[in-house]
Length: 144
Image 1 (cartoon, rainbow, N blue to C red):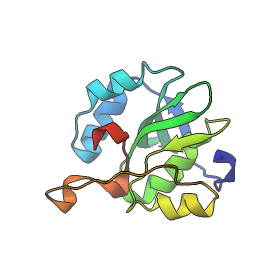
Image 2: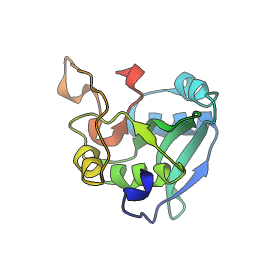
Image 3: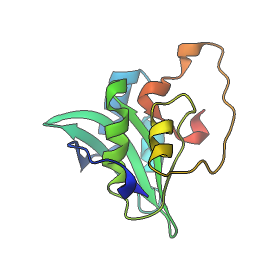
Image 4: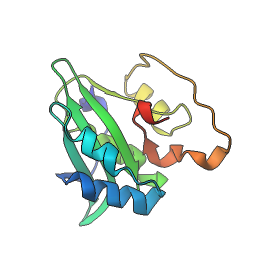
């Protein structure tokens, strides 16, 4: 339930897929234009930027199916924004919401404390610890 999360002062605005991809590439160094274009075509999809004042601090995509919302992907400019960015985007959802948070992410205990549940899990292995920016990313599970 997104309403169980504490409030945030960050705001959200819709952006084009190319803008979201450009910002994520600038922040994290991964060009995801093809993924953002695909995500933006999902049913009920919104590609968004999370804003602090007038500055984007996160970008992502939220979709809506008949039964739930899914935070498909979220990337932040730095780790300190991840919780507030999740809250800001999830505030767009008006019901059951799902996301794929890496186990080492700061959002996992925070979401669990708010009453969210782990519904499934997967294992991710990398050849280098820094290969995946877990502290700044809620990844689409198909990208790991």
